[in-house]
Image (cartoon, rainbow, N blue to C red; front, side, top):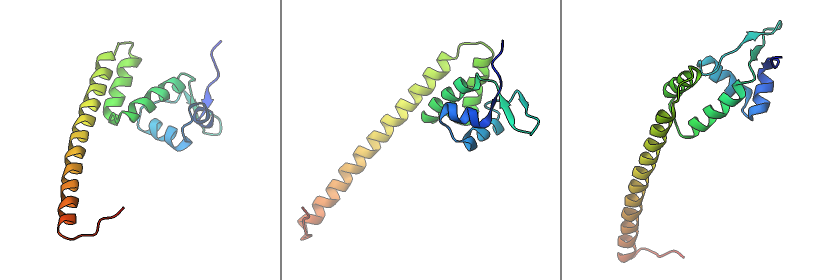
Length: 126
């Protein structure tokens, strides 16, 4: 027996996402509805809960929506997309490393500015 379709509020509760976010992902084509209730409410297959978990994880990695949609489409077609996920994670690590380098350079520059200011008679704070 198939599990009954879930209303948007039930999906939101199961995933911990706001209803507005679930609706957004639906409107963007990342998740789909199976039908509508007689009252017009969106009804979702229970498998959407797992997909939203993956979406949440990939959005945390700042995967852009078009790339996220491509990953989901490949996954739904039954193909392994480990390479795409690995590539996205590696790209994110490189981006973080570059940002850390930039922040370290900025910190050093600010430290030099502060030292120069203190040397010319500025007040040293505790």
